[in-house]
Image (tube, rainbow, N blue to C red; front, side, top):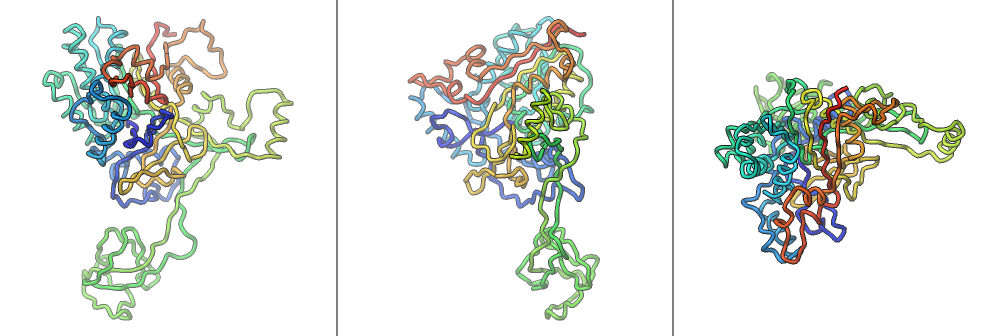
Length: 517
């Protein structure tokens, strides 16, 4: 899913760093502890549930959170940066629950730049096929198809196929609406409602194709590894639910059918005989017509199927981290790509290792490292299903004001009553919080080569073996100056938000070579 852009000039300060911090306001009373059952889960599984759980996930039921502009912004009619920020602020005030992606803010020009990059490298001797992962509202798909229709030979557009792979059913419907604004596009466009990282949804496509991923990597699940000091072994981090010690909190019955208090869902009701009953809804009947013990002591009437109200606090459950030896294959592969030894050591002389060990004991410093295992899994699937794919991905290379510790740590942000706030822990995600990560583009390139079968850590990867991918990472401004039409997003005084306000975003392009061995 795409990351958010700020709706206030507060985040467009002189630093010119876009902070994807404004998230939609929701009133969902969902406790993150419900994501984790009685068995611990890996951090990536916790994050996946917090973002994509069908009932409680942040993205699952929020099509309205993806902003759609009624029309293109007329940048050439704006005086400059101040006028642009004022216009942007007005847009967000009109769409209080929405956020806007770069492809939406700069439509159609942002998508046109992507289409031009594809056209310059595509092989038009075969039908053009494009996959988009996490297509948002469909603005990119429509913009790319519009550009190809207007600028490519007619046979290219007539024979092309554009497939959107979307995990959100509500966004899948929105994409069809957006692309359907041009009737001829619908015969070439389809949405597949599924998880792109699930191998079962793919066949094997032997023909060349393109894959587009805009602001997708930042919301892919990550894992976390931990070491108590500089030389201790790495451990994989799990998330577990811990209950308060002691007996469950007893409840005081305060009303019957006409009571005014309502039990909190998921709370424990004391039945008076040493047993407790878990409420499953805000108003629940006594289980199987059972009569709570000692009800007369409260002066309450009783009759079958009576609705009971109670006052009290349920037994609290909190999430905490659990550390285990590294055994997960995705975590181990990521560590291998990063050249991180499981035992915490690094390559070097014996004297250097001894010195590090002494220093670590004298001045121990815990280490936390976030691993893009979701990206690794997705690229493994894509390379297996689309061995001749060309990839174009865009995302945030770093994020400002991150409070969570660890290399490549995420921002966790939520919005309540119109105010955006960052959280100090990823465990604070309660279904109303977004979790998004910076993309390490150096690591992305290594993962890409690893999944293509060329990069084999600890082996000779010299050029004479032949790389299977040609890759390049470009700043957004460099990419758009090369492939886009920057004049279309320039204000009267020369200020260009598409080029000037995205210093912390990059494009990654990866195309196959003829080296297949």
